[in-house]
Length: 172
Image (cartoon, rainbow, N blue to C red; front, side, top):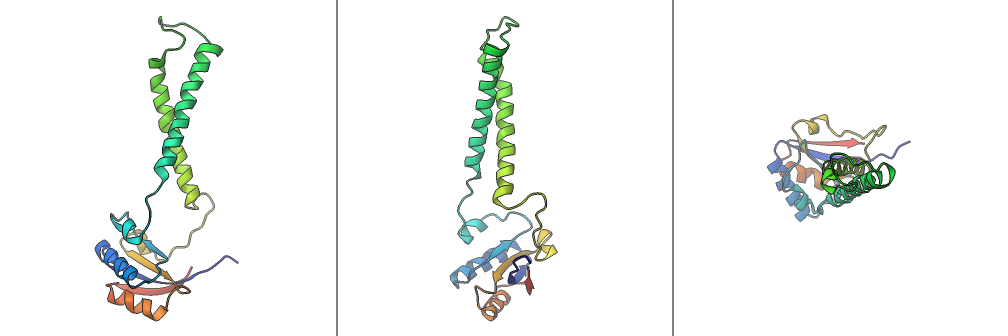
């Protein structure tokens, strides 16, 4: 049997109410399990205390790998494997390599970042993630607490006082 978690969560109608509630939860020292939103909410990461993503570093590394692959591949092809002079250009014509080098840089960076993102977030084919409430993907904002980590009655009263339109418990 899969691991299950008992949660208590509150649904909010507006992202400003959600950010205000997260700030109140942090100041009340309540351990937030997760926050769910239907779209990225500007300013939520610092309020939650999350650090900046390092995905851009991976993108740079993948891009450089693409640049090296293209440049070294064309260098080997045009100087060693198939050295043909065409259009009066020398065997090693760097300006002629730029379009393909650019394209492989973008290709490696984009595919590498997508694969890295999926691996880090545990996504991919065959992965089934539990859904707390279907409205979270549409128009509701949610703060979820693990019942094992917090006092349920305290969290429930906090959620109601912080402007949650609904408060529910669920096992996921």
